[in-house]
Amino acid sequence: MASVASNWVSPPTRTPLIENLVSGVDRYNPSNVGILEDYLYHQTRSQEYDCLANLAILKLYQFNPDLYNPDVVINILIKALTSAPFPDFNLCISLLDDRAANTNPDEPDPLPSLLPTLTMLYNLLQQCRFPAFWALYRSDEVESLRDNYTVECAGFEDAVRDVVIRAVKAAFTRIGRERLGTYLDLTGSDLDIHVAKLGWSIDSSTGVVTVPPNPDNRIESTVVQENIQLPQLTKVITHASQTA
Image 1 (cartoon, rainbow, N blue to C red):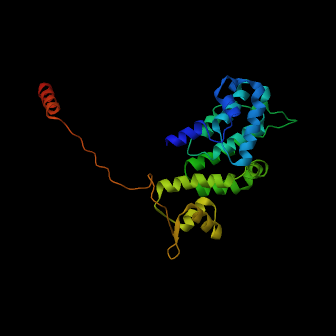
Image 2 (image 1 turned 90 degrees about the vertical axis):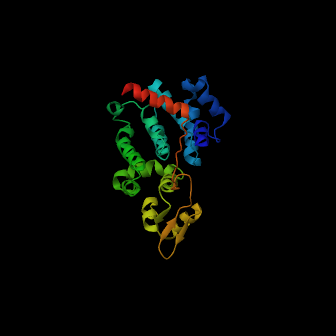
Image 3 (image 1 turned 90 degrees about the horizontal axis):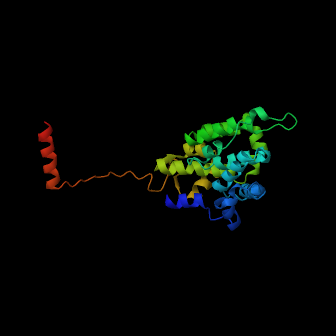
Protein backbone atom coordinates (compact mmCIF):
# COMPACT_ATOMS: atom_id res chain seq x y z
CA MET A 1 0.00 0.00 0.00
CA ALA A 2 2.91 2.36 0.75
CA SER A 3 4.26 1.91 -2.77
CA VAL A 4 0.83 2.63 -4.24
CA ALA A 5 0.62 5.87 -2.28
CA SER A 6 4.16 6.82 -3.29
CA ASN A 7 3.43 6.25 -6.99
CA TRP A 8 0.24 8.31 -6.67
CA VAL A 9 2.13 11.25 -5.16
CA SER A 10 5.06 11.00 -7.57
CA PRO A 11 4.64 8.59 -10.52
CA PRO A 12 7.96 7.21 -11.83
CA THR A 13 7.04 8.47 -15.32
CA ARG A 14 6.77 12.11 -14.17
CA THR A 15 9.54 14.27 -15.63
CA PRO A 16 11.60 16.71 -13.51
CA LEU A 17 9.88 19.62 -15.28
CA ILE A 18 6.41 18.39 -14.32
CA GLU A 19 7.63 17.57 -10.81
CA ASN A 20 8.72 21.19 -10.42
CA LEU A 21 5.37 22.47 -11.70
CA VAL A 22 3.36 20.17 -9.46
CA SER A 23 5.41 20.49 -6.27
CA GLY A 24 6.78 24.03 -6.50
CA VAL A 25 5.33 27.51 -6.42
CA ASP A 26 4.83 27.40 -10.20
CA ARG A 27 1.86 25.13 -9.57
CA TYR A 28 -0.33 28.26 -9.54
CA ASN A 29 1.31 30.05 -12.46
CA PRO A 30 -1.30 30.26 -15.25
CA SER A 31 1.40 30.57 -17.91
CA ASN A 32 2.29 26.91 -17.27
CA VAL A 33 -1.15 25.51 -18.03
CA GLY A 34 -0.15 24.66 -21.61
CA ILE A 35 2.71 22.47 -20.37
CA LEU A 36 0.39 20.59 -18.02
CA GLU A 37 -2.23 20.17 -20.76
CA ASP A 38 0.39 18.74 -23.11
CA TYR A 39 1.39 16.35 -20.32
CA LEU A 40 -2.23 15.25 -20.01
CA TYR A 41 -2.43 14.44 -23.71
CA HIS A 42 0.82 12.50 -23.34
CA GLN A 43 -0.91 10.49 -20.59
CA THR A 44 -3.87 9.70 -22.84
CA ARG A 45 -1.58 8.48 -25.60
CA SER A 46 0.87 6.52 -23.46
CA GLN A 47 -1.46 4.96 -20.86
CA GLU A 48 0.40 6.80 -18.10
CA TYR A 49 -1.45 8.57 -15.30
CA ASP A 50 -0.59 11.46 -12.98
CA CYS A 51 -3.49 12.57 -10.82
CA LEU A 52 -1.73 15.44 -9.03
CA ALA A 53 -0.62 17.00 -12.32
CA ASN A 54 -4.20 16.78 -13.63
CA LEU A 55 -5.59 18.27 -10.44
CA ALA A 56 -3.16 21.16 -10.92
CA ILE A 57 -4.83 21.89 -14.29
CA LEU A 58 -8.28 21.95 -12.70
CA LYS A 59 -7.03 24.25 -9.94
CA LEU A 60 -5.62 26.65 -12.55
CA TYR A 61 -8.98 26.60 -14.37
CA GLN A 62 -10.68 27.35 -11.06
CA PHE A 63 -8.47 30.38 -10.44
CA ASN A 64 -8.40 31.47 -14.10
CA PRO A 65 -11.79 30.78 -15.77
CA ASP A 66 -10.55 32.19 -19.07
CA LEU A 67 -8.17 29.19 -19.37
CA TYR A 68 -11.00 26.66 -19.16
CA ASN A 69 -10.96 23.95 -21.84
CA PRO A 70 -13.85 21.45 -21.61
CA ASP A 71 -12.08 18.79 -23.68
CA VAL A 72 -9.18 18.84 -21.22
CA VAL A 73 -11.54 18.46 -18.26
CA ILE A 74 -13.33 15.53 -19.89
CA ASN A 75 -10.03 13.79 -20.59
CA ILE A 76 -8.97 14.32 -16.99
CA LEU A 77 -12.21 12.73 -15.77
CA ILE A 78 -11.79 9.79 -18.15
CA LYS A 79 -8.31 9.13 -16.78
CA ALA A 80 -9.59 9.44 -13.20
CA LEU A 81 -12.48 7.09 -13.99
CA THR A 82 -10.15 4.10 -14.23
CA SER A 83 -8.43 4.86 -10.93
CA ALA A 84 -11.34 3.27 -9.03
CA PRO A 85 -11.60 2.26 -6.25
CA PHE A 86 -9.38 5.23 -5.42
CA PRO A 87 -11.20 8.59 -5.05
CA ASP A 88 -9.41 10.48 -7.85
CA PHE A 89 -12.63 11.06 -9.79
CA ASN A 90 -14.32 12.72 -6.82
CA LEU A 91 -11.23 14.84 -6.18
CA CYS A 92 -11.50 16.12 -9.76
CA ILE A 93 -15.24 16.74 -9.46
CA SER A 94 -14.65 18.83 -6.33
CA LEU A 95 -12.58 21.31 -8.37
CA LEU A 96 -15.18 21.84 -11.10
CA ASP A 97 -17.35 24.93 -11.26
CA ASP A 98 -21.00 24.82 -12.32
CA ARG A 99 -20.69 25.76 -15.97
CA ALA A 100 -24.07 24.56 -17.25
CA ALA A 101 -25.44 28.10 -17.14
CA ASN A 102 -22.42 29.54 -18.94
CA THR A 103 -22.71 27.49 -22.11
CA ASN A 104 -21.98 29.51 -25.24
CA PRO A 105 -24.61 28.65 -27.90
CA ASP A 106 -22.05 29.31 -30.66
CA GLU A 107 -19.55 26.92 -29.07
CA PRO A 108 -21.45 24.51 -26.78
CA ASP A 109 -19.69 23.12 -23.75
CA PRO A 110 -19.91 19.29 -23.88
CA LEU A 111 -19.09 18.85 -20.18
CA PRO A 112 -22.55 19.51 -18.65
CA SER A 113 -24.16 16.85 -20.84
CA LEU A 114 -21.36 14.28 -20.37
CA LEU A 115 -20.71 14.77 -16.66
CA PRO A 116 -23.81 12.83 -15.46
CA THR A 117 -22.82 9.89 -17.68
CA LEU A 118 -19.23 9.94 -16.49
CA THR A 119 -20.42 10.08 -12.89
CA MET A 120 -22.78 7.16 -13.43
CA LEU A 121 -20.00 5.10 -15.03
CA TYR A 122 -17.72 5.88 -12.11
CA ASN A 123 -20.38 4.92 -9.56
CA LEU A 124 -20.96 1.59 -11.31
CA LEU A 125 -17.23 0.84 -11.10
CA GLN A 126 -17.12 1.87 -7.45
CA GLN A 127 -20.07 -0.41 -6.70
CA CYS A 128 -18.44 -3.29 -8.65
CA ARG A 129 -21.48 -3.47 -10.94
CA PHE A 130 -19.28 -4.37 -13.88
CA PRO A 131 -21.87 -5.87 -16.31
CA ALA A 132 -24.00 -2.75 -15.79
CA PHE A 133 -20.97 -0.57 -16.48
CA TRP A 134 -20.30 -2.27 -19.81
CA ALA A 135 -24.00 -2.20 -20.77
CA LEU A 136 -24.12 1.56 -20.21
CA TYR A 137 -20.74 2.16 -21.85
CA ARG A 138 -21.78 0.26 -25.00
CA SER A 139 -25.20 1.93 -25.18
CA ASP A 140 -26.31 4.60 -27.65
CA GLU A 141 -26.50 7.03 -24.73
CA VAL A 142 -22.72 7.00 -24.40
CA GLU A 143 -21.95 7.06 -28.13
CA SER A 144 -20.72 10.67 -28.03
CA LEU A 145 -18.32 9.91 -25.18
CA ARG A 146 -16.96 6.84 -26.96
CA ASP A 147 -16.61 8.39 -30.40
CA ASN A 148 -15.12 11.70 -29.31
CA TYR A 149 -13.14 10.94 -26.16
CA THR A 150 -12.48 7.40 -24.93
CA VAL A 151 -11.47 6.33 -28.43
CA GLU A 152 -8.59 8.80 -28.10
CA CYS A 153 -7.57 7.48 -24.67
CA ALA A 154 -5.16 4.62 -25.37
CA GLY A 155 -5.99 1.45 -23.46
CA PHE A 156 -9.13 2.84 -21.82
CA GLU A 157 -11.08 -0.42 -21.89
CA ASP A 158 -8.10 -2.41 -20.64
CA ALA A 159 -7.70 0.15 -17.84
CA VAL A 160 -11.32 -0.53 -16.85
CA ARG A 161 -10.54 -4.25 -16.91
CA ASP A 162 -7.64 -3.58 -14.54
CA VAL A 163 -10.19 -2.09 -12.13
CA VAL A 164 -12.25 -5.28 -12.47
CA ILE A 165 -9.22 -7.50 -11.89
CA ARG A 166 -8.28 -5.63 -8.70
CA ALA A 167 -11.79 -6.24 -7.35
CA VAL A 168 -11.88 -9.90 -8.39
CA LYS A 169 -8.45 -10.59 -6.86
CA ALA A 170 -9.65 -9.10 -3.57
CA ALA A 171 -12.94 -11.02 -3.42
CA PHE A 172 -12.50 -14.41 -5.11
CA THR A 173 -10.34 -17.50 -5.02
CA ARG A 174 -12.51 -19.18 -7.69
CA ILE A 175 -14.95 -17.65 -10.16
CA GLY A 176 -16.96 -19.02 -13.06
CA ARG A 177 -15.52 -18.34 -16.50
CA GLU A 178 -18.77 -16.92 -17.90
CA ARG A 179 -19.27 -14.70 -14.87
CA LEU A 180 -15.74 -13.35 -15.19
CA GLY A 181 -16.40 -12.75 -18.88
CA THR A 182 -19.38 -10.51 -18.07
CA TYR A 183 -17.18 -8.57 -15.64
CA LEU A 184 -14.45 -8.06 -18.25
CA ASP A 185 -16.73 -7.74 -21.30
CA LEU A 186 -14.77 -10.52 -22.98
CA THR A 187 -15.80 -13.85 -24.49
CA GLY A 188 -14.24 -16.87 -26.18
CA SER A 189 -10.54 -16.80 -26.98
CA ASP A 190 -10.25 -13.12 -25.98
CA LEU A 191 -11.26 -14.06 -22.45
CA ASP A 192 -8.93 -17.07 -22.36
CA ILE A 193 -6.00 -14.96 -23.54
CA HIS A 194 -6.69 -12.28 -20.93
CA VAL A 195 -6.92 -14.87 -18.15
CA ALA A 196 -3.67 -16.49 -19.32
CA LYS A 197 -1.89 -13.10 -19.24
CA LEU A 198 -2.93 -12.75 -15.61
CA GLY A 199 -1.39 -16.11 -14.80
CA TRP A 200 -4.75 -17.52 -13.73
CA SER A 201 -5.90 -21.03 -14.68
CA ILE A 202 -9.18 -22.27 -16.15
CA ASP A 203 -10.50 -25.76 -15.49
CA SER A 204 -11.74 -26.79 -18.94
CA SER A 205 -14.14 -29.39 -17.51
CA THR A 206 -15.89 -27.12 -15.00
CA GLY A 207 -15.24 -23.68 -16.47
CA VAL A 208 -13.95 -22.44 -13.12
CA VAL A 209 -11.17 -19.85 -13.01
CA THR A 210 -8.75 -20.12 -10.11
CA VAL A 211 -7.47 -16.84 -8.70
CA PRO A 212 -4.03 -17.24 -7.08
CA PRO A 213 -3.77 -16.49 -3.34
CA ASN A 214 -2.96 -12.93 -2.40
CA PRO A 215 -3.16 -10.94 0.86
CA ASP A 216 -6.73 -9.83 0.10
CA ASN A 217 -8.40 -13.13 -0.80
CA ARG A 218 -6.82 -15.41 1.80
CA ILE A 219 -9.34 -16.66 4.31
CA GLU A 220 -7.40 -17.02 7.54
CA SER A 221 -8.58 -17.07 11.11
CA THR A 222 -6.98 -14.55 13.40
CA VAL A 223 -6.26 -15.36 17.03
CA VAL A 224 -6.05 -12.33 19.28
CA GLN A 225 -4.27 -13.02 22.55
CA GLU A 226 -4.21 -10.45 25.32
CA ASN A 227 -1.84 -10.70 28.24
CA ILE A 228 -3.09 -9.08 31.43
CA GLN A 229 -0.55 -8.79 34.21
CA LEU A 230 -1.61 -9.51 37.80
CA PRO A 231 -1.17 -5.90 38.99
CA GLN A 232 -3.48 -4.75 36.21
CA LEU A 233 -6.09 -7.35 37.15
CA THR A 234 -5.87 -6.28 40.79
CA LYS A 235 -6.61 -2.69 39.81
CA VAL A 236 -9.66 -3.80 37.81
CA ILE A 237 -11.04 -5.89 40.68
CA THR A 238 -10.40 -3.09 43.17
CA HIS A 239 -12.12 -0.53 40.97
CA ALA A 240 -15.10 -2.84 40.46
CA SER A 241 -15.50 -3.41 44.21
CA GLN A 242 -15.38 0.33 44.88
CA THR A 243 -18.05 1.15 42.33
CA ALA A 244 -20.37 -1.74 43.20
